[in-house]
Image 1 (spheres, rainbow over the protein chains, first blue to last red):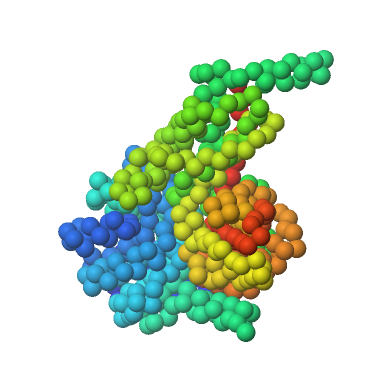
Image 2: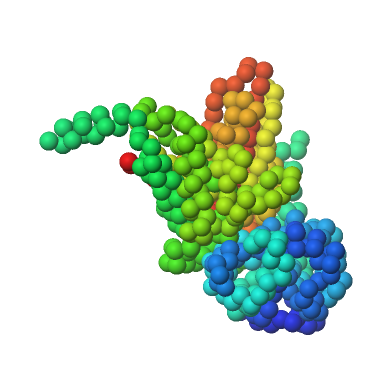
Amino acid sequence: MSPVHLKTPLSREVLDLRAGDQVTLSGTVYTARDEAHLRMMEDGIPFDPEGAAVYHCGPVISGSRIIAAGPTTSARLNRLTGFLLDAGVRALIGKGGMSSQVADQLSGRGVYLALTGGCAVLAASRMTLRGVYYEDLGMAEAIWIVELDRLPLVVGIDSHGGDLFGAVAREANLQFDRRYTI
Amino acid sequence: MEIIIEFISSLLMMLPPAGKEFFVAVSDATCSAIRDAEIRLPPDVVAAIREAARNETGDIARKELGHILENIALAGRLGVPICQDTGVPVVYLTIPPAVPVTTDLLEAVAEGVRKATREIPLRPNAVLPLERVNSGDNTGPGMPAVHIRPGKRMEVTVLPKGAGAENMSRLAMFLPTEQDRIPRFVAETMLIAGGRPCPPVVLGVGIGGTFDGVAALAKEALLEPIDTMAPFEQELCDAVNALGIGPMGLGGKTTALAVKVKTASCHTASLPVAVNVQCWAARRATREVIW
């Protein structure tokens, strides 16, 4: 199956995606981890959130170059994400999936896109650095403004309640119980 | 002739190392080992990922492993770290009889970490635990974590440890009669972890020793090559792979590339078990220190 090409700012087109679909994403995204989320909740979102994509990532930056920029574990941001979706953010990018609460918050609004964890050089090869907010938070925690060129992603959670990570976890639980519960 | 040279060099090795030269040799070897570990995965790990890619049948699982292999090749070609989480430095020093273990020696290792952070470069990850203040150079109180063991030659082995997988690690103090709970505990560790530690993982399992020692054993198990597994290790690996979590938690046959076990004697009333989770980027490298 050939991937669907998406470009930011994202529109209602993301609502057509289903968990398991393969997509590529181009355009501007904003990196944000724990500290950046907390700062944004306090001070407001420093970029236009309408149709934006937030990337769970703390990159290695050297001068104006992105050296390595793979995804971080999204689950750490489970309880810090609602305000972004309320403000119009349409895509979250990360690894490992997010909670059922976030899946509910995405319902009818946006998607969670999974990027292969650890593939920091592959990711960086599709990125150009455009700017930064909150640089005082340090390299890993600042919000880096990044231009993407066809980053390959999988729809992990769609806007209809479909959750690939959730489905895999349910099956894993079933297998575990079958083997170890008497 | 060769015997004479060997004899003389072994005599020289018995002399206590001289100050500055030795310091530089240790810090350079540390920096060089970190560079190697960050940029190139050990061949046994790459082979295991290739094998996993051949075994997977699902479209998404194959694609995830394809991305990983592409990323490994790209990092090697460009000479940059495989993953942006360049980890915290875990260092194993093998010390020959002539080398005294001093604060200078530990400082030389720390200097190697600082140099590696500047030159490779690495992401500065080391922070004070409560204040969350970042030192900026991957060192600080108790960091790098240095483990010392005796040996014939002086060697530095580094194992840069990322947080995604480290955070999923677990420890249990079982009763001596609960041996049969070990496979369940190992599988349960990955059940809880799901896709978060970047599977396919390598699991280091420590069994025995003491509360603190069993965690160290689990980490040391990650230094072992993963191209072979003992029957018990294979049994644990199969139990984990039966969960179907797959590459990145998106489903598939390979959740663990390998499970490695290390044991130590323990109290007759105890059975400590620790599982140290390692992401697919199972980074490790060794350098001999020559001065």
